[in-house]
Length: 203
Image (tube, rainbow, N blue to C red; front, side, top):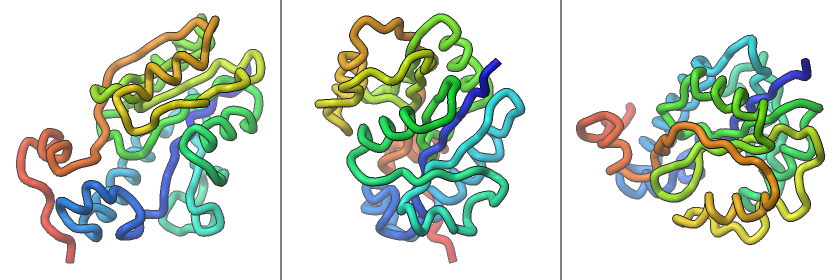
């Protein structure tokens, strides 16, 4: 059986560099602090012998040597381009075997979700974890053949069309879906997650 790879896309949690929409509501330092702790907790939860956990880091040079992320987890650079360019590169260049990609800002992800995604790739060429806003929190490819040419082309990122646009680049592929989960982009997202006010500013 080929290895399964779960790739988590991460940015260095510097104020003004990550979660800037959230930062406009609660302050850039607090938003970066939230992202750092959310990411750390997610990586702890997603370690599992059923797949190889890989970090896709940005910026490339800083992320590859960062002491923030666990030193034992393999890292690859995200590289340049928009989200589609970066995810397409990951899906083309990873070693043989199914690959799922997630972001680090989705608090609800569990090992059960990831296991379900890989199981979907047993009889589908692609799998998505939809988001309520029309985007998606997970994309996976079985990779029994090279990723299709044109994958992620003309996708309207950060809009309600992102999932539909991406599916349209996978014509003729069997596509599975798993649970719908939300990311955290705004203070309203954070309040919905916590059931209360946003976190206090860290010291």
